[in-house]
Length: 435
Image 1 (cartoon, rainbow, N blue to C red):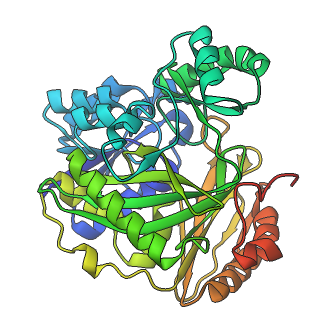
Image 2 (image 1 turned 135 degrees about the vertical axis):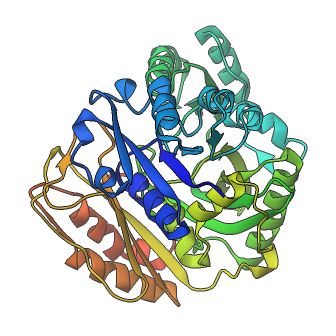
Image 3 (image 1 turned 90 degrees about the vertical axis):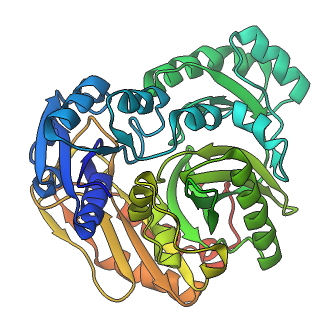
């Protein structure tokens, strides 16, 4: 097992990883930008190193400075969290070159499955059904030709990255010619790669993702599904597990198909396979994320599996100590993402308590919410024996949680949780339209 890990991230996920390491008896190293020098994760880590100015390009995306901090501190491994360098195959190779363990899949596997166009080809040899789509389209003329074959409407997407960026709904050729260069530029700026591809637009649908965890010995366990259909502009707002729209038979089949597909890949680490479920109950495979998801906590709450600790153990060569038969998906867990609506300084913070309620955050009174990074303050997670009770528990927690000094989306989250459509569980990706 590692004795020291560097966390190549910031905010709530850096705090989450530091806490897991402390519980495992592992020393931690934080790297931070000038804008984050007073942040909670910097204070909690055993060692901290400033690696650059506020912009992500000068700090959290600066591979050489992060490697230098790891070498100077004597860290044996680097945990990338999510976002930034978490799905960067070049950075994973750089870690290898310097004798540092990258806590995630190996670079070769990451290269194979991170490309959202190529992964669909891999899945064609499994029981999973990919959404009809293309490989990377180097020119707008290639895109126009592909769209005419798939037929409008289509989705124009970045081949790499995530977080809802680089995605556009295209209804006709005029929109495609207009948006293609914009999508390429956005993908290049956000992910360092401007490759884009096209896939068929499945609508209406629910966004369902399957969480897997696999060791290097060929053992794969699926931790069930999350429903991530409450989104605005492809940004997730609320997640829950299990999905109220997936029945037991469909869940069991999907778990089996996903597990077998991941085994064929030879994948190791945590990963998420994302699907669209149409109104006939068909699951259409979209992509695989080869990192920890923002919403991993809702799965942890339901299964009682600490995914961050198991990421670390797997990277250290430890075999999974549980099997698929050990996973029980009983009860209901719901997560609300608490976001700042504008930069500012937090004055007071009050987090509700009680059984089966969790808040994963990276803020304390006095924390500056920076304009340079994601607006996520933290994630409020509840668990209950029934979905009805979980909805009530979340409503109560949202009424109690307080952040003063800045404006947040808490009122909107409360409105969503209180909406009869959400309470019924009969919602899909159209839920936020018009709000």
